[in-house]
Amino acid sequence: MQEQIKTAARDPVCGMTVDPDRAAAKFVHDGKTFYFCCQNCATKFAASPEKYLAAASSTPTNSAPVAVAELHGLFGIV
Image (cartoon, rainbow, N blue to C red; front, side, top):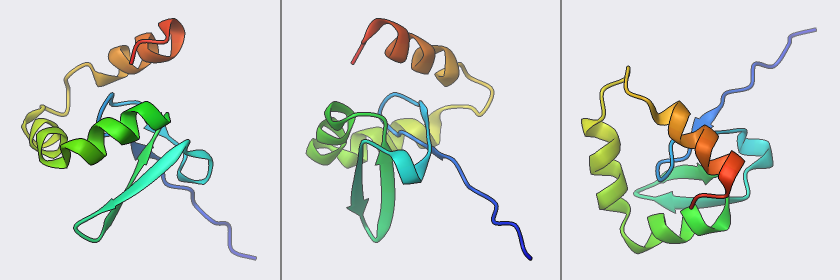
């Protein structure tokens, strides 16, 4: 029996790690599906996907999106 490996996705708006099977929302842009922690992040992305994709591509991989994601969840910051 082969074990399935789950892949986590990153919410392009807040940087939070999202389980695609449990994502609060998803949005297809240019043929790629993006997953979101909440509907508010999906709404922001849908209004201006290029803004968030440009920011994500210019963010170094060792930056602190996890800290932002923790605040997002702990304090309801949107």
